Image (tube, rainbow, N blue to C red; front, top):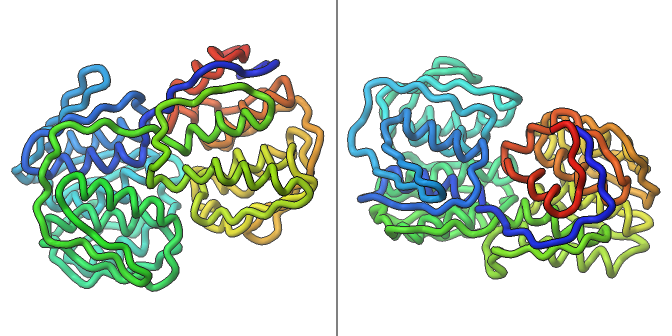
Length: 398
């Protein structure tokens, strides 16, 4: 697909937060009564979670933007689910499946088979679950029981969120952290979702505590706008676009709300700017594009976990920048970027949705870009190119 852009101008309504939507769907599936969730964009990942819950016996009705979840009160004998390439769906459902099904066969696609899961599986084995293999596809069996959970805080915050969401089913729990917690914003999202369903929790330096309490449906939930995806349009403004982004909660616990602060930092440090990306990893790719045009020299640091995303996102970002003419280099788990003149190019997305969106936004400067495997954008933002086209880009061969 080719994109030709002179400039982008107009208004965009931020799509529903994927992070909140996953959690609401899962909590609603084991709450006390029906919950209606308002979602304005159904990404592939969200549909994967819905399909998996349905296959686990949860009745879910979709009427335009309204999703009504009828919780399951019966355990199936056997279930078959496909988590596709959704890491959130996989990790969040893994502790839950034993409550909804006596035996669950799980398969996947893409790089998910190679993404981190060992630490969560080890804890679940101690909790009484068994796995037919150490990697997907596998079958989950056994009866879950409560243990003293323990996780590193710097591998995947989704491990911790997954246990937090099943904690109400086991009378609450305590999760010990053996290393510094990264992506704490995602734990705060889980905390807020639990609170909405009537369950309190605490996030401390060395542990997370979920207090005893049953999940009580709030009735109806409107999922707030997604700062991670909105960041692409906010960053486009730094490249010369004029886009008004609506439907964002300025008081959100989403860590990527920090994009506003980071863009201000970039504008105030145009000789050299250094950004620690450990708490906001989803901003890495689009910030790299902005930095290449705004700062003489910059560094995105502490990006280790990005090597285990849909692509090795440090390497795929480096390759994207190089292809469009940006001088940059990888130093360990950091990306060093030099101010460069961009040029039209063919970009290999590495089947990574964030590379696709960042390359499209870069066309404001390059004026033309061809993106390989652009369909990867459907993972998080299926209507992205509809928006880009409406804002002024010429999208060819879609």
